[in-house]
Amino acid sequence: MSSRKGQKSSARMVREQLAREQRRRRTLWTSVTAVAVLLIAGLIGWGVWSSQRPVDTTAPPDTVADGTAVAIGSGPVTLDIYEDFQCPVCKQFEEQSGATVDQLVADNKVKVLYHPIAILDRYSSTNYSTRSAAAAGCSVPTGKYRDFAKALFAQQPPEGGDGLTNDQLVDIGTQAGISDGDFADCVRSQKYKGWTQKVTDAATKSGVTGTPTVLVNGKKVDTPTPENITAAVDEAAK
Image (cartoon, rainbow, N blue to C red):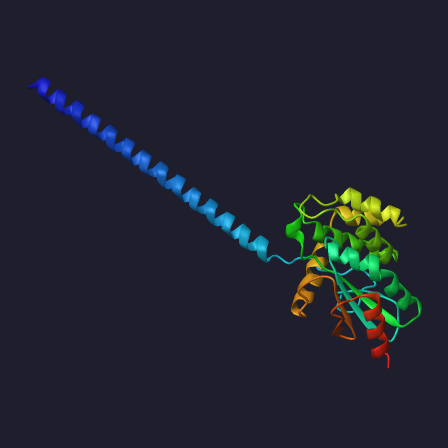
């Protein structure tokens, strides 16, 4: 009898031990699940905040009032040029028509509004369109925007590669005559990355779908050769 009672007692102790172990496991898994849910919620919340947080779109000094263009010259006719430093056709445009545009400025016939936009980031593995346009923004306070832009086109990297590094962009600035000590830090920090996006967004909203796009007093020059640009400017000046 005594032996039977001992067996029952042992069995009860085993059942109680198993019950405690089951409760402990349930508590543990509940805690793990709760932590996982909080972690996932936190990651989702961070992602939403990160995507919605304000981006600094402050324009470089000396840009136009709305900050979407770099103004060169003060002539009566407005010449808008939308360009992407990764765009091979923009390079050709600079080689063929750049000198004509510069001469129109020198003759005080036009005010040129340069819009450095970034629509070809997909053609490099380092978002070169954005980085080069942001670097161009860094050149604005130095008064060397045109010199830097010409140098960027002259040393344009091929599509599909890494693009130039930020250090190489700084070197191009030095070659273009930029000696301002703040320029290098500006380029490396991509200070004007947000501004580049602002300029690009504004171009898209205004109907620009490709580069180069050239407008004379708001009217598109379909084939922006030196002759066609000059003719359009002369017509607009009448």
